[in-house]
Amino acid sequence: MDVWIEGRDAPVGRLDRADDKSLSFTYADDVPAEHRISMSLPVATTPYDDAACRGYFGNLLFEGPQLERVLDGFGIDRGDIGALLWHLGADCPGAISVTPEGTGPGKMPGRFPEDYEPLSDDRLARIVLSLHQHRRMPEAERNPSPVAGVQGKIACVMLNDRVWLPKEGSRAPTTHILKVSPNFDPDITRHETVLLQIAAQVRIDAADSRDLVFDVGGLRVNTLLSTRFDREVRINEGAGTIHRRHAEDFCQALGLPPSLKYERDAVDPQRRFSAAAVNTILARTTVPALARRDFLAQTLFNLLVGNTDNHGKNTSLLHQGRTVRLSPLYDVVPVFMDRRVTHELSFRHGGACFGEDFDVHALHELMLDLGFGKPPVARTIKQITGLARQISEISAHRVPKSLADGLNAQARVIQNALMVDFGLEERDHFDRSIRDEPSGAAGGWGAFS
Image (cartoon, rainbow, N blue to C red; front, side, top):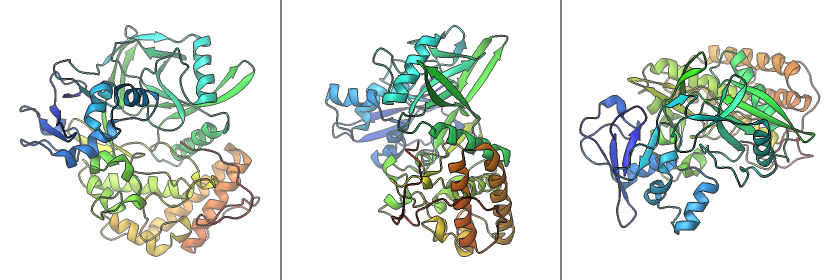
């Protein structure tokens, strides 16, 4: 199979699947170092073996109906990454495509409007209703660009207040992701939108997101429209081009399979998603000091809003020529409000596995793990205090009462662990579970993305 990066006229390399299902990847002879497909697979003259390939290429596969159809229709083993990419690799996420040898790239830049078709209001309403009720596209609709995650969502183009989809066979990119709240948790997208907007207000680089509410047959359906940070749009006076930017998540950059996206799932200490492992990635970005600063800010924000789902696939790197930088913050939800899932941190913060354990020593160890030679702990605690106050002040006026109460309770957990006073205003009690221990009534939060 040929492996392509959008914008390059020839394959960047070749992926081979042996009869025993093992993989090997070989770069083409003329590939410059900046066209590496992953930090875990730098340009080399010798092939990469199966162990090296699985961490990156396994993360290109997405969950959903298309994967299930290929598994069932062709009788393919779920662990047969090469066979699955033979059928699905042309439309895997991002700028990379994997196609049968000699068939050409799976992805091309989009010409707007030639490569796109506008969605009528009725058709869009049917799609939103199906995603709301069933978390899947209507049977008569194809998914033009599958996106990962358990939430009902569709990739699209939003221009001039109209929704467009790539025409079938165009291989053109989208510019936005429309997430639809499920019927059992109708406010989830509202909560995610407001947390990302709060992050932007406190000067954290975050994916641009806004609420859209659809009235479908008298039913109000909340959605989140998120601008894709891995796109470049060059459109003037209604015409132009849309390009994909090459991005990879931290699992891919570390060569870890999706099953190891949480640190707690690691078996081998050398193969785990951890703060120290993240530092090995950040150290290879174009400006490591800025990447460390920004990743720490994202981590502390996630901690204060109770998003313990910031795993290895929910943080990414953007590759732009020779420049590699941390992506904006995305997929932020207050997981601590959901009693059906663990509240254990996705990676240890120093020795802390839960927010309740994030004391001054844990902060110091976290910053050491992230590559801060002499961690300015006192200054960072002042930054955390200021961040907590800003989140509290903004959420008091911008979010539903239950979420504002919950965020206040979460901030107090971190305040108590650090043994400092954030100076927060009193709010109504929120019954937050401690270290996953069962307690009283549920906090009212449903599924998360």
